[in-house]
Image (cartoon, rainbow, N blue to C red; front, side):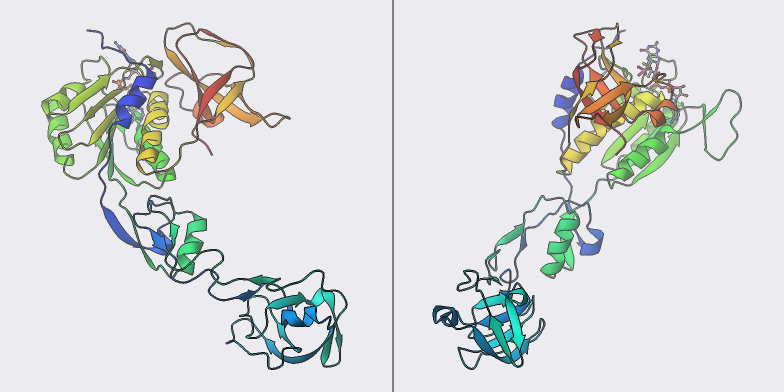
Length: 403
Ligand SMILES: Nc1nc2c(c(=O)[nH]1)N[C@H]1C(S)=C(S)[C@@H](COP(=O)(O)OP(=O)(O)OC[C@H]3O[C@@H](n4cnc5c(N)ncnc54)[C@H](O)[C@@H]3O)O[C@H]1N2
Ligand code: MOO
């Protein structure tokens, strides 16, 4: 019996309704890169925490400018990292260094470039319209103590690591990462360290999925289960208690030994769809366990598995982890036809043309078993099913799998 095939947009709609309910955990801030913040980060003090000297030079009181004074006795030197000095006579000056606290009794910094040293005095020929607080980074001007610096839900990048360090956040609460099981099925599969017989192949899908997840900061565990219905049932059931997400490859089309859809049904998994109007990856099966764990059962052909992982699994996962998914469009640089009423994911090599526009060239090869072509291409473009002919200059959604 033919499965009811759905459009890729419907797949997006169905998958986007599945949400992971992940707990929070505390990690050391140095291990928090790429994680989703689960608490607000507040300013522990004003930013800057004191009136900060912004230029190396001399600190004076603005009344000296008003009085057209231009020769200043140097009272002292205020380096960065020293406690605040005090100007004793308001017509004198203190030498000040960038990053130092502004000495009490001064409110203007005149950079060295505008001054000339005359023995123990400083001469200023031109104040260049300096006034109160010129070249002073005022206390609390950027952020006030207690204000939110980073909102919960933000992905921690190197920019946030700097802020966490500044507020002394040694431990930070982040969303726990999902636990993912990647399961290869098939009797023909052997380990990568083995010499396959003529009728066997080394398993590769599970490793490409695992490393693709790793690129997003998600670790996973690999399993291999043979095409034996009972073994599949027992082993899959056993894994249900240990993972949040399941990614299968193989065993979902029409073969006599493609048991997965039946096994899932017998284990109480609720099927959401089986079959997508697309190539590659048509037999894609998706369901949800009683405990709200999504099961992505991807077709076994390596390119089909890889496309489905990149087109559906990774964008969904990133959304769940509050990461932004960039979905640019690219310009096709040559005509292309595809004569089936399916969405076709064309393997392409991307580049920027001389006008800075993102363009793509179709790569030759690229059938659903052509694993080697994935290395030549760097993305798929999505050719919608409502047309068969695509012409040079068409703008199409692009799904990158290489950065
Ligand atoms: N009668 C039909 N036959 C097939 C249909 C169909 O609609 N009707 N669909 C075809 C399409 S499209 C695809 S894609 C494949 C998907 O089949 P399965 O998901 O059941 O995958 P398998 O049959 O188990 O394997 C297909 C192919 O991929 C290789 N494979 C599987 N797992 C791995 C792995 N972990 N690493 C590397 N390679 C793997 C496997 O050896 C097979 O060569 O079905 C078509 N048939
Ligand atoms: O997913 Mo199948 O690739 O369309 O061969």
